[in-house]
Image (cartoon, rainbow, N blue to C red; front, side):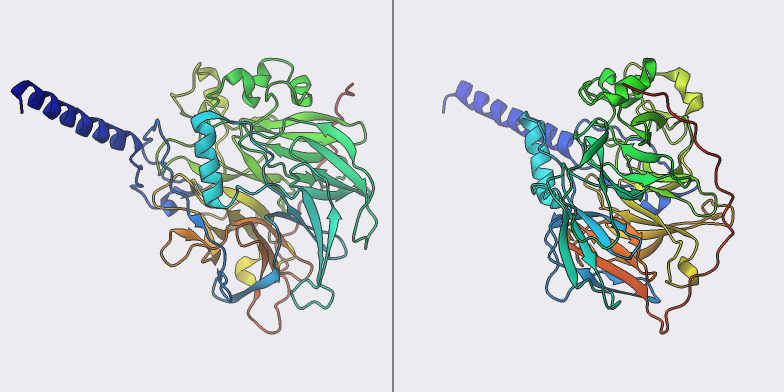
Length: 492
């Protein structure tokens, strides 16, 4: 072989090895240096950020449950299937007569092309979220009280990626991904044939498409959670919810066609006038909403930003303050700056509220309900149940379980509290495959905890293993009802 050709081939081989090593270095997963538990509690360990150009992509393969398999309940509790054979069940709501509504739903079609679209499609399919949305709310009825639903009916159909549901003033409100609608409701109905009445429109779709809705204790307004469409506003801050405070916030939030304006926030909606206002902002992806029974204050769980490594920042549980700013996209956990966001907003740092409770990095909290009415025993009588859907970008995996955060008599997480496992075993013994993934959580009329499982396509019921079932603990006395919320200005 001629000496020159030999040198060329050797040089090419060396360059190929260097190139392959560079690609491996760029795509290597970031491995956690801290336990997931370190990022929990009132004062979580945030760790040092390790910014990534390419996210760690570690998501459990969705395989479903083998015959006879089920998750594992905590000591003193037991679990059984309340309903099986559902189609991507995500969210739950209990009607006054004890009937259970389940939103069988998924993301609307995503208009994302190129490499980003391919990667997103691969991740969604791997995680079990690549199926079309059924766009249906199903009613389940347990007539004989044995903890299993005997009756099932299509309660509402033809919706647009529905999620949250709530009753108020004789209306059933449904939070579609792009707007709040309502239907007349009569107790005992197993189907609603009426056409939806639009209450308000808001930004829909995007990477964070879920919209929860809850009714205020005074029965005069509703609250809807709206997530961002991106990680840290990388598609332009003018297209993100936090930027709306530079102009007419309400006008932008009201316009769903305003290039993703009105996102990363919680809206307060006044159905009588069909108007709304921004309650709180700077929340990357708030999902579940619930009122704490002692203080009667609104709480939410929030999915924080990605590509800062496997240890940080923690997803969280927090009170929602009127006018509160929670940092996104410029800050996280009460004022830690994210240098990736440009242009920066150092003037907002001092106004960034610190969340109340860390749930761990990348655990993806979705479901939230408080223990009022639960009959699971004294260890589960005053606190919050949270469905952790599970990580897609952490090594090792985190979440994939239901946890309980103990509260004190003051309506806040107890001193030195840590999340307590309620329902585990959604990952297989090897910890790499998802037999199920928990989403919505509610307390049923008999005091059991219902958990929607969108990979296992069923609803689990957690109850006390004791016989007879213990009565609910009396718990702290609720605070007086809050004063009526000021009315919003009448819109067009």
